[in-house]
Image (cartoon, one colour):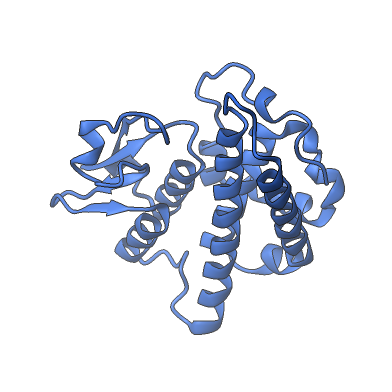
Length: 219
């Protein structure tokens, strides 16, 4: 049995679990709730497996600890030969490029939320830059929504799903679907897949997860 350091709110954990379902390995993974945070004292149970003390971290049956969702997802795919990471150059570059774009946007959304919790208030100049980057990223995904929808389902689409889930969770008033209709149509189709439906966006029981960012992101 593999062990996954896990949190229900993490979009990167969600990404790994969708991949685990797609590869048929979800029942071979024990999820261990492992709280982490930028200012939180590192949990000894995590740091012994991952010196960065970040989730997700997957520990394989032979004790190998794998860090970062990209590494974990590729490991699960290679282990089963599912093809979420294509072997041919052009389709592989398309998938890992989408993965990089969506992961980068998710990183911004997560650290942006943390910035909004600072007692002295957020650094507005930085927030303005993040806002511009998220808008540009969403426009790029909208421009490529046709290709995303027509390309066989892979790690790129999975990562985009998880990034969009963070918009729904943390910025519900951004109304991104109205501004990016082709991307919204593709997302609606992806959500019908059993793997995506099995791991919906979760607030982990946190009250009003959108309040911190209300009114800070507009398309």
